[in-house]
Image 1 (cartoon, helix red, strand yellow):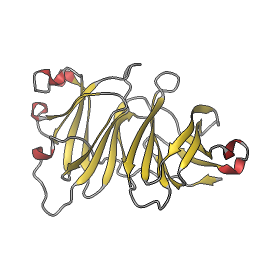
Image 2 (image 1 turned 90 degrees about the horizontal axis):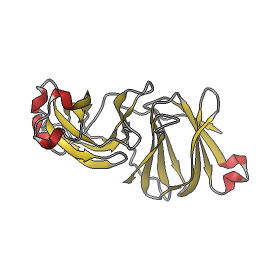
Image 3 (image 1 turned 45 degrees about the vertical axis):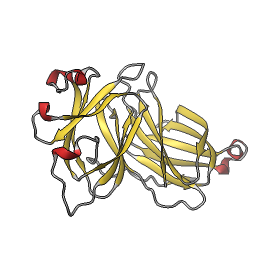
Image 4 (image 1 turned 90 degrees about the vertical axis):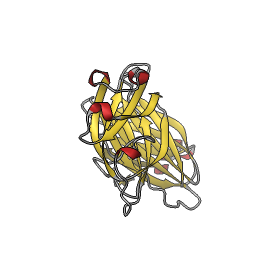
Length: 248
């Protein structure tokens, strides 16, 4: 059974840092957002270690403050409570923090993003559909799921649109009606599902051809939690999954 795709929101929203809230004056009437930061950027086969800096949009690069030192592939930071404002975020070489000041030749890439007001979001450093470094942002639905849990399958890989087959283990291996298909999802989009706690077989397929791209057998969905699964990397080389869990 095919279900509608819940598109990720805030195309240019959110990002990082416990130290950057001070670089933009707080707005008394605007609620801060809770921001998680996810490292899903495998710039080499080992998963690049990076430093993350951020500063007020428009400020000189050397005014940016260090947010995360030696941030490793598949790590998650946060939640960070950030006042709504525009920030420029810099993903830099892991030696950038050695002298305490960021220089232009240490920057791998940068992006100016807007921290919204009063939301819970995850910002993932990842690749766009063409394989270029970017930051994808996904809203976290933390509303109650009763006795079940929430699963958010998030496309942050250098890959075309995909469909995801989600089968309730072990029954889906015997009866096809225990399998639901979600998609197609483009890079930067997510399929959000509220479902019973338990184990699920997840299969990622290229939407245009149906070819199997990857699978996660017996993936656990936990009651009372949002489980976010990020597809990251490049198919055939660094493709993989990063998992984040948040209490509902």
